[in-house]
Image (cartoon, rainbow, N blue to C red; front, side, top):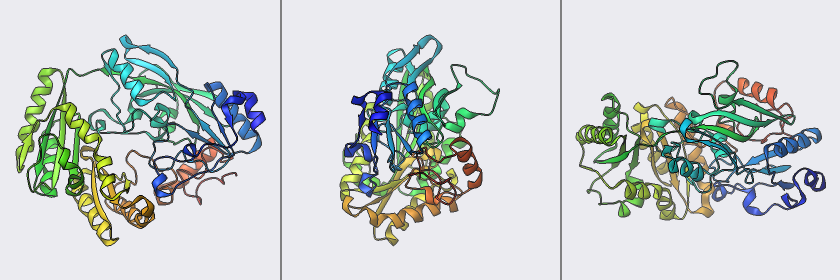
Length: 449
């Protein structure tokens, strides 16, 4: 196996004993560890397609891997070939005057955003771990982030893809065009498919002129109900903040000490909004946000943007250190059920003897519902997580808003799964692409290996 794959990518880019860090992702604390017969690092899209063709000819499973920052085990291999895309790092084109770029799958989120910023442009998607996460993985999971409320998730900014598909064909869908309805929307089908339908090799990305100003507004509330009512008033007022976040009391217990400027006593829900645009537009929207959020608030503040987002970026770490570990899920519910989901997350934790909290993207109804548990005892939280998924479905929501399904949540999938299975069977008839991910075993095609 190693010799034949070395003939495709070069002997220095094939490892018969993959290092342990390639066999896990951010679910490591939950005991999710994979295995692979060989690690392969192709250097371009043609080599990716050739490796896939080799696997398909021999019935060998293939798992694509980006930066390994996922929270659903989507890149954890289940035998066969582990295909790391880290060497696909070329920026194929950058056209600032046309607000677009084409990059390969291994380019990091931070580099995409930096390149855009250096030319006065913005690539809005901002999922976490920007220095490690890769654009191919972000597209494969359709990753979100705090600014998805105004700007949408990653897929909204993808106009074209180059994908290696079974049995080893390099396919291009879309491109630099902004509109294309000539056929079925294969681009949208592949976005969020988590490597189960094809391996994303490169992407055309749409950009925007960067806003002149970003002005945050933060409001503290004495109850979940008061804070959620304020969030709904923002939408009812016709305001479109760039971000609309929340943090509950349990989250603040872990993170409030470092909040810039401090928080008032009795804060049970913190709402974080941000206005952006021209200086005049940002100032106007920030003023209107402050006015709407002031109703029923303990306090309304306008902190320094850089300090606030540094704090927000550290919230997950602060929560983790409180008990030495955590199990965090990304359920999503209709906005009007957000308050109920926040409170019932805590109730679920209490029933299972776990401290629980949540924070997340309030405007999207996207909660990072979290159970605090030492890393060595993470399995204690699994029954609570399963109950949380049922809660999301009960409230009319979904088991994942932005992290994907991967290996962690596939048994909890609902909906017209026979249609999903038909798509999988049509595009991956041997079931070799990222097996045992996305779909339950009794729905997906038999996985080889």
